[in-house]
Image (cartoon, rainbow, N blue to C red; front, side, top):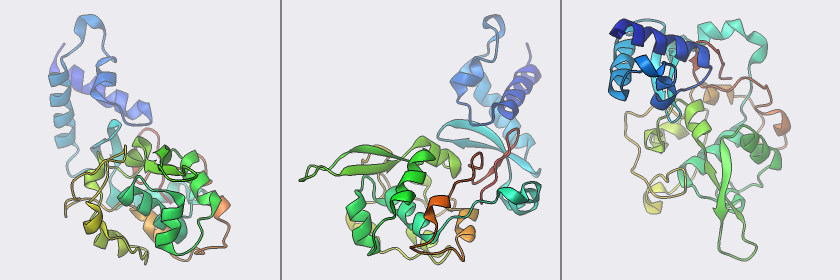
Amino acid sequence: MNDAYVRNVIEAGLLAAGGPLPVAELLRLFDDSVRPSAQAVRAALCELAAHYEGRGIELRETAGGFRIQVRRELAAEISRLWPERAARYSRALLETLALIAYRQPITRAEIEAVRGVAVNPNIIRTMIERNWVRVVGHRAVPGHPELLGTTREFLDYFGLKSLDELPPLAELTAMGDVSLELALAAEGGIGDERGGAGAQAPESAVALPGAAGEAAAGEAEEGGDDDEELSAEGRGSAELVAGAPELDG
């Protein structure tokens, strides 16, 4: 077994997987007799990342592991392969998702208090069906309302390794004319996936909605057909993943 063999197996596995693979899963691709160390696998991943520099694809690490995907700057051109698959994201959905991501754990009533309008049940339902949002607990108040938080699938969709990579709020609100009154400084920053407090996102973080924010332009705020938001099954990536292409709307 040589380094080229390890690199080729990993590359083939990532292309065939259709989603992120952690190092533990990549190790399982090899027979016991020739299985490399985790360090060797990580070295091969670094070599692949360097090999893709300046090309149309890249190696990206997300919360779920590593994946090979089309570079963000080429998404508009590659999207022409699936012209009928473009999903639309309303401003209402993006604002609700951003509130959950930045202020989790949060209840539906708290979301409504910030936005000033009732949350369409279809918005919460579609985000849960997409596995972007889950119930992480219940608030210790009368009625015990559900607390909502984001999932690993949410991070994978937007190409994030952790919530610490969320963009600064000012950058997010500038996209798609989304206006959120989030007093994050007073709230203690970004929470982790289980609702704990985390560090403030770095200035260099990638944009959360990506092309989804652009797709929100022109969508109805409230009272539109939110039931159809994110309804195109199989389209679930803010990036285009090689091997199992998915187009962000």
